[in-house]
View 1 (cartoon, helix red, strand yellow):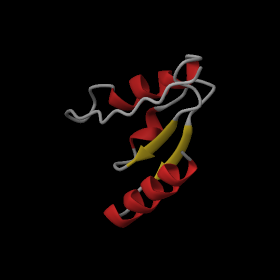
View 2: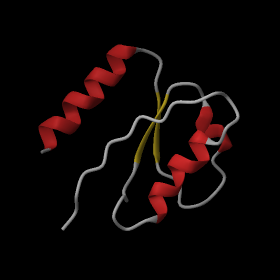
View 3: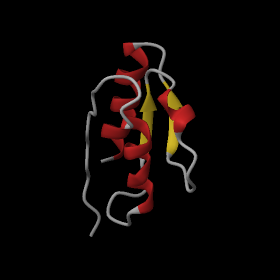
Length: 73
């Protein structure tokens, strides 16, 4: 059974938020992982497999993605 996991990770620049979040792709319970990148932090992700990454430029994009994901439920 697959469960859903949502997280918002906040912190100062350079603390490892993006590489940490990318490790979710490595775990069966949290994969596949969708990574919404709001500050180009995904550039620091070097491990494979990488999560699906969407670069965000506006709050409108976030709401559209959320609506699409909610529709899939």
